Amino acid sequence: MPMELITSQEVVETAFPEPHKIDPALILSQKIEAVQEKFIRPALGVYYDKLAEEPFREFADSYVKPALAFFVKYSILPDLAVSIGMLGLMSNRSDNSQPASESRIRQLRLQTWSDAWVLLSRAIGYMCENRERFPDYDAESIARCRNMIGGIVL
Image (cartoon, rainbow, N blue to C red):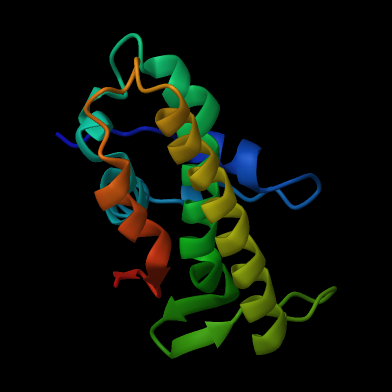
């Protein structure tokens, strides 16, 4: 069974500020797993599988979970903007609000993407600065993760 580094509730508490909290049920565990595999595993290398163990659990809580929460937010923003039903894709709308424009959604995703990478870079920096705790960390090959565009490692 895949390791779940963060719960949907933790994602909401970390990446969705008041009063913009969303229902954690909107964040599927499969989405969290996919985001972990796409962004966190490549960045952490051999240490990804050790995050649930001591002494790496504190590192995961302090450095990895915040980055993961923002990557999950980045990933689900399009899902929050539309509803999928029998009639196809529909913009979410209520009597008291209107859906965000495409440019606003794009702007929010870009900001969330940037925040996620800053937080992940902080985790990578911590690993590089603490080589005694992470002796097998290959920062040179992992640096390729910073050159991602649209989820593709260049």
